[in-house]
Length: 630
Image (tube, rainbow, N blue to C red; front, side):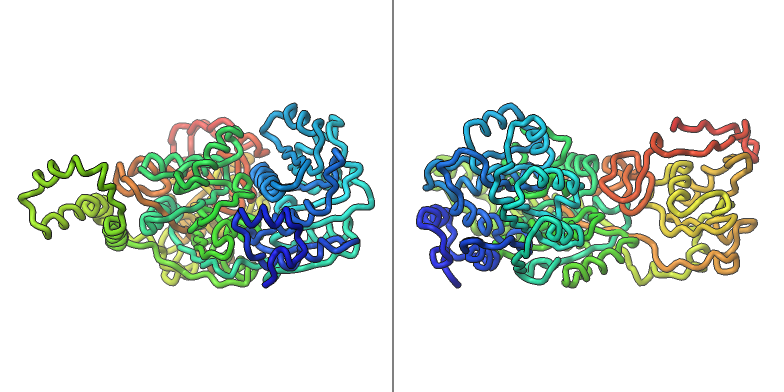
């Protein structure tokens, strides 16, 4: 493989990157750098996974091409998030260490715009920006990009996923016709292809690996658990991997904060990273994570975009992303720079189909894993402790003065007894915590029952409302969840017929659902809810024309170690034995009391609800149930 100097990189740049430890170009660098250094080079599309060295692939040729005697913007680099924006800026500053007169400014939201304007006025050649903040600066006429010679779109697919298409169009309208456009992306969806058609001229396209695929050295594993066991599964996986250094992805800001807070409460070394944090808070969390003083980072997709931290061992999908392409970006946080890593998905039974779709997307097979039981976790933790004892460095000078007292205290214990007692300190703690811990894995073969078996078990609700009442599956789910206070991740398949519907729910909430509809009215007529197949109810789906259902839902899992302040708790009830259903939608459409990071969701305030007339008393003579405010 060629060295950087043989690729054509200048002496000052080679000197700087050598000091950074870059000796051998990565595949994307080896292919892109010579092409971008050619006189009169073409536009370029570079497809490669995260962690493959794309910043140096465009950064080194860019630094070599610019005239640093001119104090005006000559290059514009767009990135989707402030974290990635700051990372690119830092990398370019490191590469240009021995180049005189280099001016690089990062502009992004969450920081003082006046400070950024002042930096631009000093004279810069490279502007690294997030689309939103750059448009603010353009509107204020604080930055002039009308003469930029190079435009770099980094993580183009992610910018489009985040809804920046109009911003990108607006920004590009302020740039000159004659410019070089370099587009780098991990995946190539149709939206990215459209950008290349609209704004690039005869681009040279290079691909490292297959398009839209995951890195070769990542192991992909999924665990299936019930939704209520998701948090418990997370903790077990982390406990089973004592040396884990990972990122846990959640769908929403609120959920990431909740998971982080509960992990901290349970003694784990974790913290949250999401958009509701101030820039100062985000920087503090990221510094701890980069310094490895933080073991688990609980993050949303947007907040984690651009995180480039070495030696991340695990990426854990506490929720699968709504956009399949996002899985590639998530998993790319591990196995960077040729290292290996593990990407774990904690799913429920409804999401097994998503795993199959992701497998096709990344051209990799997932391994179906089993959540370790308590004995396995205790064994793993015990031998991890023994290994640490064996490898620990003894500070002879500092501990010497304490040794006489230690020897005297332990003099009545022989070698075997001392080892047993020492090991039992940690072993007893985990043994007590995991004593009688249940198996939380879902047996998919056993759950793949027919609809006849399903309603006989009392897991299907018959409702005498259907499409004739104006319902489809989505609106039925919203209506059902709003009346019952059952969350969307407890609801399975929904079949809406002409004048009735079947709704699959988890067995533990079937009675709650039936009770909630007692005395309920819809547009002036009584609503009846029964267990499907029960006496006087809706009857069999097969006989009643409802059709059978083939699948349900599912869960996932993962966990971490260090200190347990209470017995093993489930994800639904972090602090008590009584289930308290998660206020989130774990996938697809559903009712949610919080902001949703994706999928169809609604809040009571947003839902345009028809007028449901409610009698003063129910049909059973019960007092009128007070309806919650919408």
